[in-house]
Length: 205
Image (tube, rainbow, N blue to C red; front, side, top):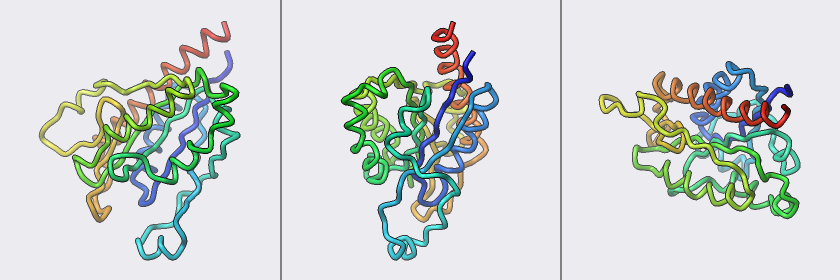
């Protein structure tokens, strides 16, 4: 059987989404999936990033439009901006018209995960606005559901929803992903790997 391939594509200004993506990557690889990680092109100037006290970018290659059609599935790491995805990720997806015209992403699997400053910062609305891209491309969106019992906990702050794992960063970025959130991310990676692997196995049978 061909080894399933999943790309993780993120935008991460303060590394919260990046840290979640590493847990997801571990989950995917634990199920035998080949994983490659990418970040989208930054659109803010170095001057602005310095004023925002943003750390250096993760050491990841930049995702380009032509590479989106390569894997069997893509997991998108989306920090939120006013309840929707950031402009940097939107710029990538807005430029995917040529892929849409060819149906190049039709039948590919997609999933999402998130970071917001607060518990009510729009993780679910970010998912719902991302789904429109997947629908137009004919991609198969795989929500996480409530696969982890930890999602129902009320004794601690936990990011994420039925649409995917998530974390809460606080307004100044000081809060880091917790072990609980990272564990949920690992499980989402496992679950997505199972779905993609099942499809690849049937396709190649």
